[in-house]
Image (cartoon, rainbow, N blue to C red):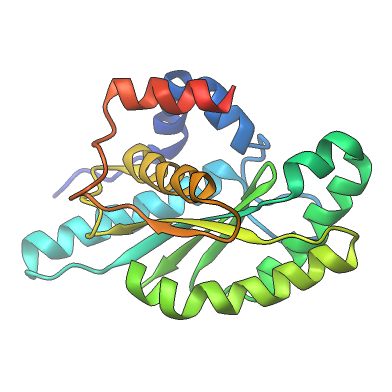
Length: 218
């Protein structure tokens, strides 16, 4: 009988935290499961556990049934929030809470939506980066931008996407890093950009790349 899988996500992400410290602290609010802000969104470790389950299941079907169950991790960043947060922290919190409530409502029950600091992220099952670019981005953008505007912040959204098997994901940490890298590339391109991690043109998540992302986050 195969050994029962112990829950590795918190341990894996503790290691991930030590490897890219400042970057993860920028994203994480420290909540182990759901946030207590009326948005019903998940925290970092809860989402990581869902991702670990998807990765385990996908790798198992790949080996035993010669098929892969695709999924994507999508980061969503309100482009104007950084400056607004510096000018009026309390209003910025109101904006993030309003956007969080809207984000939870547009997420399918089969998927998982979370928030890391001022960024939103979702696990989307049975979909591809191409499908996300063609349909999900527009579906999410309208309600989130409207919620932000109503709370007092006109903003665009930038998206970073990492998909399996498209991004050759090795594990939870690798998936997070690739999605974060895609988001940082989108932010470099300018407000409202959408970038999917591409193994053909983007670097592997080496120690040097982790240091680079960390330095940019500090």
